Amino acid sequence: MVLDRLLERLSGLDFPRAGGRVRTDATHVLALVRDVNRLEFCAETPRCALEALAVAVGDWLRAARIADVS
Image 1 (cartoon, rainbow, N blue to C red):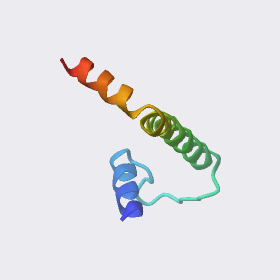
Image 2 (image 1 turned 30 degrees about the vertical axis):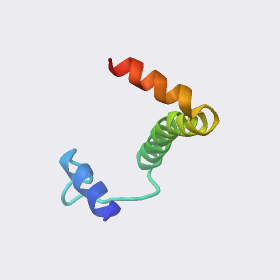
Image 3 (image 1 turned 45 degrees about the vertical axis):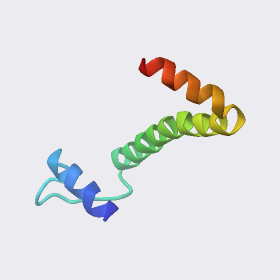
């Protein structure tokens, strides 16, 4: 399912191009994979920090969220 979504997204960006040769060891493909990996780390870091805060000071975090919504 993940591969299907990835191919769908890439085909929307004209990658890979129809009739062209596709090499998975191409430099640009490796660079794209590196960028996606870095983006995933950027998304995971705040999530992990919030989980640690929720465990350590859950009451404070709930109070901060309620104050922010008001």
